[in-house]
Structures are given as structure tokens and as C-alpha cells.
Image (cartoon, rainbow, N blue to C red):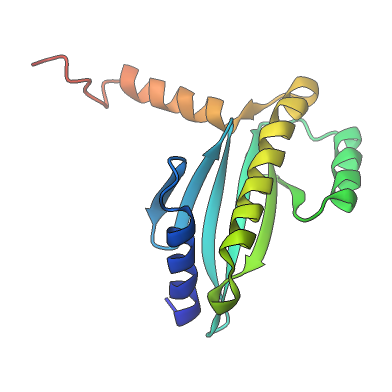
Length: 161
């Protein structure tokens, strides 16, 4: 991890660390939950001396990407303050993402504004997309996976004592 990445992680943890919705996943990777969305915050190197903070929220998995939806999302991209919708073919994922500079130039207010806006856009648009084009929200997928793990016996609920 270069010095800019380390500084970026310090700012992220100092700025967001006390919030209930914030979790550290691993070094340089964090998650924030907002409504039905999860924003993954990833610190990535940019060369040897710089870093980028990449914020990505998965809106919908299994979406039917039709030309009508493509055009709507591209039109939205042109009018957004920052960030963009994107489609990941593997898994038929619709995401919203935005990146900012890390390191010594990373400002806590800018970080909060970025994470907040990415989360709010994702939380708003996941339901809109699902209603018209299908798919599942990230929250629903995680809840299904957790329930499946409990039902399979992978997790013990502590009732056997």
C-alpha cells in the first residue's frame, strides 16, 4: 500500500468510522448501507504515489437491459451532478459509481457527499428499475443468501444449548 492509499484509508476511517452504517470489509475496502443500497468504497492505487476512492453501488442484479432502459440511463448520466450508471454483463448488474481523488487532497466533506449521493441515487433507482425491467435489489439478494445459509445449517442459532 502506497502512502497515498494509507492516507486515504485514514481519512475514510476518521470521517465515516463512527457511523452505524459503515463497515470495514478489509484493508482499503469499506461498505456503507443506505436504505436498500450498499455502497462499496474501494481505495485503489493510481501509479506509485496517488490513490483513487471508487464508490460503487449495485442497484439491480438480473435486470433486463432493454434499449429503452439504456437510453434512459444514458440521458440521466448526462444530467447528473457526478457519477454514472453502468451495466456489468456478467450477472446482468446495473450499478452506479463515482470516483474521487484520494491521498492528501481527499476532503472528508467531499467523501461524505460522494458516498451520500451514490447511496441515495442507488436507493431511489433500484426500485424504479425493478418495477419496469425486473431483477433484484442488493438488499434482497443478501437477505436471501443469509436465509439460505441459516436454513442449510451453516449458521448455528445458539438454540442447541
